[in-house]
Length: 522
Image 1 (cartoon, rainbow, N blue to C red):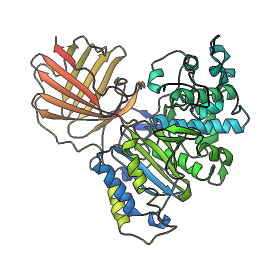
Image 2 (spheres, rainbow, N blue to C red):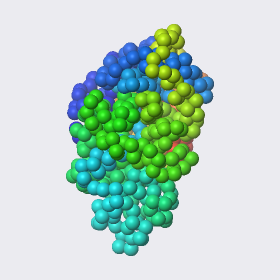
Image 3 (cartoon, rainbow, N blue to C red):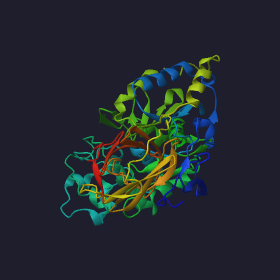
Image 4 (cartoon, rainbow, N blue to C red):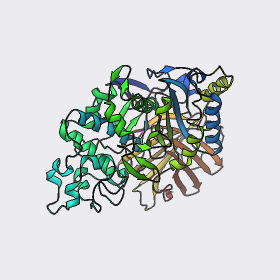
């Protein structure tokens, strides 16, 4: 599989055509209406190869799962999906439409725990060792005056986030950079003696990926394909590349919820999957036990966070999680748009592992309630068609945009029947999103959103778009970027001479609202 190519990684009934390429899905993009009524689990026919059971048959309390979902809803937290597994059986699962089982979702720093899989495999294959010096792999980038601390840094220090850096390097800092990121790594001052100071940073995870690539002769994503993705039945995924084709080890992986729960499950079983050994038991044990004191998020293993008791978790920005409860042979996987995992962690620890009551429980009517609840989950509210005439003089016209910091030159609105097509032109070309008034419309778009989207700027991304008139002169569009955590809201206020466009996002690491664009009728 060529991981540098754009993939859809999803199957949506009644949506765009698709073809299978190397285990992933590539769309033949067109705009399609989302199915009415919404029944995400029933409508998505994706087969993940996992066993199913009822909660009580595996000793799990349906009542506790319902209480967890109620607490999440009561706290106003935005989940996109969850899967709960015990004894290798999925006992509860749900997707908030338009998210669905086969749809891929960016994992952010959950990626780091997958990078740990690659590092563990490569170490066990003898490609490199824990005590190898980081500078030895990339002498071409090491400064002539490199400090003793930099020269002392080892692979083990990268794994435990004790590489001596004083500040975090976020993936958003390097994504706009076109030079090799390995060179950028060696520009970071190594203030502390490696091994004695914990500093969480995506730079350390990137270097692990770069070392795997350097010692195996292939990008980490390609190295993992026959060793991890294929044996685990992880067939829908995409991994971004950095300059030079190196897989970003700290982020950039997009896959579905089933893949997250499989990641946790193979660790819960000590490294085996369906009778086959994927990871060595020694590696799993060391990676998922405390190796460094960590910070407010807990102690740290090898690219895994430690939780209460013996729980451990893969954790990504905006609360993408795969949480393992090894004493209960259970895993909880979540995709979310929650700004700060501290908002949801207390709810998780409140109900799990308390939900794992016994080896087996009597049948409970609450299991039926839970099934009905999860079958009807929905994120985007139904649209209520409104009959407002589009503003005179605007329909189909290019509106010249006043000087702005986004590089936007013009925009336009085309109103036709029950949809509105919004076009925007900037330095990267023309971008289009078509929003429905009666039904949400699903499509691919190149619409620029990097400033609001943690600096991600893919050439194409999947969006579900709806529109409504909130006043005779005010159009509101909702763009749910369904392979990500991001949802943009555009409030377009029309006047006699043009329009003002106010664009914001539900979550982001930095700004959540762009300066208003003002378009004028020429």
